[in-house]
Image (cartoon, rainbow, N blue to C red; front, side, top):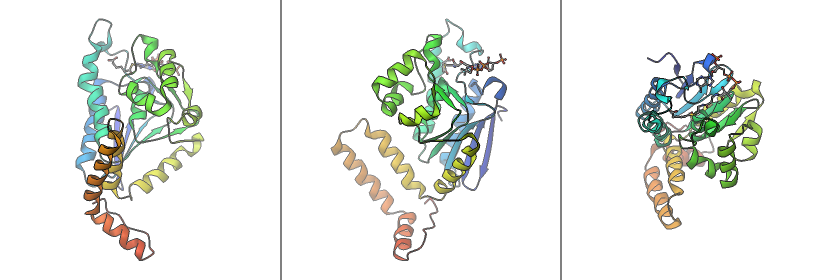
Length: 259
Ligand code: T3D
C-alpha cells in the first residue's frame, strides 16, 4: 500500500496515478518501488491488457524528490538508480503490453524520462517536458540518454540535456518525442479512446511489436529479420491470429482475447 500511488483496474486497463500533487508528484523510493511492482504485476495478470501512467493535480511528475535524504550531496546517487529507477525503467520497457503515459502537466527530470519510456505518450497542450538534471549538476537518467537521442535526434537531445530548457507538448510532438498533443479538456477522451482500442487488441502481437522494436536499435537487419521470423512463428500459433483471419474472411470485427 503506497498512499502516493493510486492503482485502479477496469476493463483490462491498469491505471497508476502518481498522487502527491502538492509536491508535483515528486518520486520517493517507496513510490518508485510501488510503480515497479505495478508494472511487474501487470505482466503476470492476464486480465491486464494495457497500462496507463499519469499524475494527479497540475503535474505529471517532477522527478526525484529532492528533499529525500538519499540525494544529499556526497551520497552515492548511482545507488538510487541501481536499486530503484533502473528496475522501474526496465519494468516498463520489458512489459510485453502497451503502456500509455497520460501527461497531464509538467514532466521534469526522471518524470520526463519515465514518460518517454512509455510506449505511447499523449499530452495535454499545457504540459511541458524538461530534462532538468543539468540544473542540479546531474545527467539525464532513467534511460534519458538512451531514449532522447532516438526520439528527437542527437542535436536536440544534447541541447535539451545540457540546457535543461523546457519544451511544451506541441514542440515535443513536432520533434517526434510523443504520439499526440490534445487540448487540456480533451486529454481524458483521447486517453480513453487509446485504452479502448489497446485493451481489445491482440495483446501478444502488441507485446511482440514492443520487444522487437526496442531491441532493433542494437541489431543489424539480418538479426532483426530472424527476430521477426521467430515472433511471427509464436504469433501465428495464437488464438488471436486465428480469430483475426476468421473475422477478416467473415467480414466482421475481430474479438481478440489477448491469447
Ligand atoms: O537520487 C537521485 O537524485 C537520482 C535520481 C534523479 C532523478 C531526477 O529526477 S533528478 C531531477 C529532479 N527534479 C527536478 O530537478 C525538478 C525540480 N522541480 C522544479 O524544477 C520545479 O518544481 C518545476 C519546474 C518542476 C515546477 O516549477 P513550479 O514553479 O511550477 O512549481 P514549484 O513551486 O517549484 O513546486 C511546487 C511544489 O512542489 C514546491 O513545494 P512547496 O514549496 O510548495 O512546499 C516544490 O518544492 C515541490 N517540488 C517540485 N519538484 C520537486 C518538489 N519537491 C521535491 N522534489 C522535487 N523534484
